[in-house]
Image (cartoon, rainbow, N blue to C red; front, side):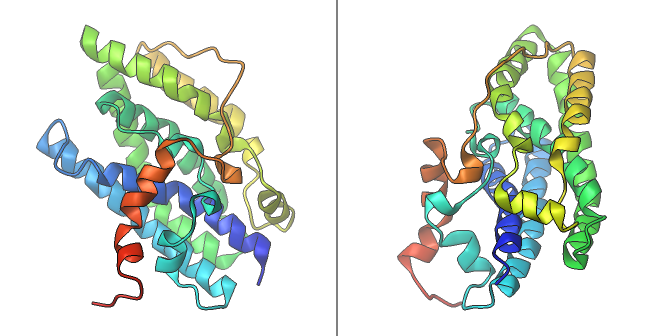
Length: 250
């Protein structure tokens, strides 16, 4: 098994899995019917992308693992998503801020991944980026509407950006698997995306009359399997059926 490639795939897929699960919690709870459906569709987009990554990971593993086993049967410390995507749906401002901060990164990442020497990864990226381009537009538009809206909406989205900003730097941290895949021409050198990421984020926030937080210290740990207290609750719901009824079939 190519362990570095397998771990690299998990590093990509786990972000979308956990964010998709978070968005799925909102089904039927959106502030309006149109927004509710949009968030649910974004969740479905992410799960669709995740299936492609996990199917490929199962092939790379070459054992009895399949996409469902990889997605739902690992212990918490084996999930390597960034801390940002596991943050709770505190209110609609937090949902949009979290989505926006991830979407901009995700789009930049997939843009570069299309040039991967790994044909399977490049193909997944080319298919996924069409969906993610919509995600970016959706979350960016809502950032502007909330930031430049009422006094209450501005306060809530500003608070959300302030609280979630501490998790953004981890998006650009590189694991050993990341470094190996970059050296092989398979992975994306995310360090080269960092400056443009913060520039694009800041441009949208400025347009939305939202202040860009000035932080010197950032939270990290998710990529090493060290998560916030929220992760266990996410997995308890995500994994319930598979844990309660092992080896079930429809």
